[in-house]
Amino acid sequence: MTAGSITPGRWRAAALAALWTLVAATLALGAYSLWRAGLDDQFAWLATLRALLAAVVLVWWTQLLARYTHAAPTPDGDGVLRSLRGLFPWLTSLRLALWALSALAYLSGSLNANPVALTAIATIELGFILAKNAVYGSLVRAAPHPEDVLARARLLSWLNVAAPLSLALGVVNVVPVAGLAGAPDAVSLTVYGLHALLDVAATLLALKAVQTAPHPQPA
Image (cartoon, rainbow, N blue to C red; front, side, top):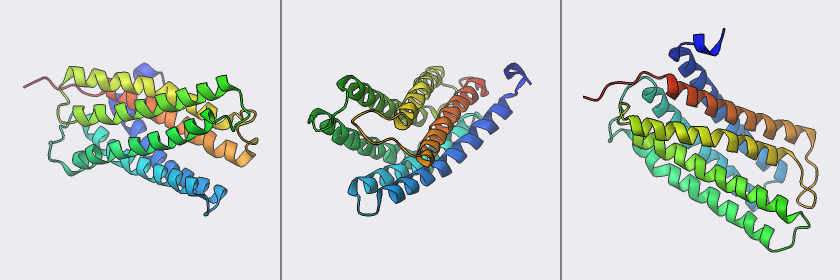
């Protein structure tokens, strides 16, 4: 079966299946990271909170996407829409705070790592955070008006940006950088690598689902 012969309904079903799987994988990743670092690691608790918030945000985002790709408008007063609108900025703030802590460690000179590599890592992480924030916000604005062409184009453009950044972040997480950390074990490589691949796949499938979704005409 070629991509051109896949119906919009199948793209939608595949995207939703991947997104719900990503929700479960994100929760599992948070639990694994905490278990691996130890319960006494405060930074690990913050990372676990980040994973929990990301999973909750993704649950609501997926519900909105399911309606949006079915050409069903979401009322402004809808509970899922209001919840997502209220929570995703907090997730972004936590991600930025953790990113800032990492950036301070990079700038302090305490790490014996290549400055170019550290700059690349920090840039990729920041780009990922901002792109994800834009993906959340774009759907929040588009969901009430599935007929809005500009809102749909904005959502598509940010999904298109988020996918390669998710892949780049996955590479950063599994490829060791000399002086930054020890070589990850095989289990960690598998866990982080699979999560990154699932994130990329879910993003690309969501992109295709939006591209092929029915487009109602403005009233």
